[in-house]
Image (cartoon, rainbow, N blue to C red; front, side, top):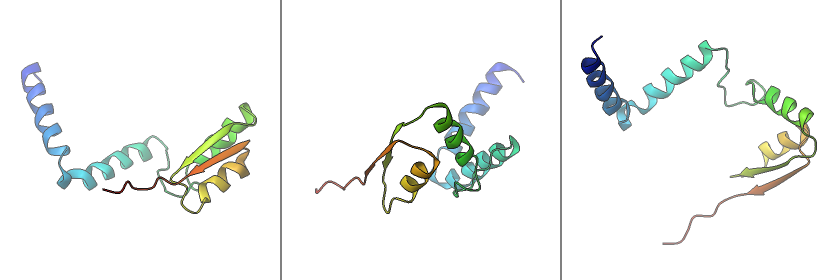
Length: 98
């Protein structure tokens, strides 16, 4: 493909893909690509590679201080502690009053 045409096509794709109308299809395409690479993109840490990653991280580095920003009920903080985090700082940002 000639360079000028390629640049034009990429520019147009960026314009279309960056719109709100394309947000969900873009996410689905990205998830399909990640799954194709063997990466589970499930929101459940037990089903994704996240648990594996945390286990390897905490095995290599003991007593890490972790932050759970947006802790809500602390479910992810509990996962971090179970996997071996030394300490977990939990914070739930409060919206500013305007």
